[in-house]
Image (tube, rainbow, N blue to C red; front, side, top):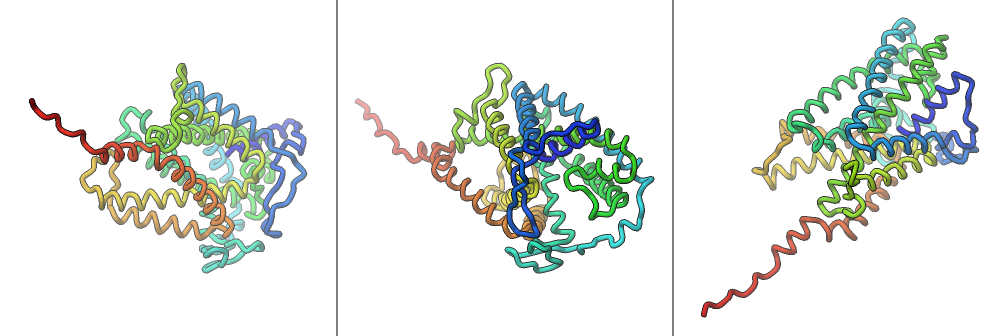
Length: 386
């Protein structure tokens, strides 16, 4: 999101004839599917991405109410612009641009670099609808992050499920509408991946609309970035309470603002560095496969907990078990295998880092481990009566 914000911000200031020097405008390298390797871009780092990460971090440290007010304003601007794109863009749609409707087919499933169903790209990556769905899956991460804010909801058992499901249905409809309008306005192979909507209106001769769309895109991506960077420290806070990560860092709450400021600052640093130095394609693929794998674990956990703890209190109750968890596992697995093979290596490395942290620290310091140690201590000898 920070990487995308940088490109739309540069697109926005470009309307006024302003540019950022190339050396500080993009990541220093990019991935070339044709060559199958990383290539230098001639840049040093992406400064706008660092700036927005710092700004969001400062807003989040100040407090949840201030963050919510800022986010509400950004979302309002975003929604207005999205409807503007759909309504105005509909007058410039050429149905011929939708033929063929799925130029790479409706599949695109591979198995560790070997395409099973569908076409294969120049770099060996799978092509098709499923491959595209896997690549853009990060757009749905925000719905998952809503669940991490349960503690700050008035009535979480009611509000959180409604918030997730209602926003999921609304946003999916808007995603489909914008995609249909965009590919109808401009042939799919002529869409600028870095600032697609604004550039599409520029191509059809509506430069005045480019200003509105670029402004809305900046507001929209800012709101998404805020929600995601708000969620990660809350995850760390919950893990710190369970003893899985050091509570002195991840469980520290600011005495005045009452926010997990240390983990928020750490999150901002990591986001800024990754967005500044790692290209969009690599970031998107890494985030996608990690999120899909996490979703599979959650679905599997529902099945396991229903078996070993059937009578546990469940404030959030998954319906139609085991059907829903099984479908979740299957669909996530299909999308994971629709990503290029190198993502599996990144996932394994990322997973190994998590295992190292867990087995060296979390497993021994967790609340559950401490509880088990106390329960296994022998009882003191009974005091004999005189």
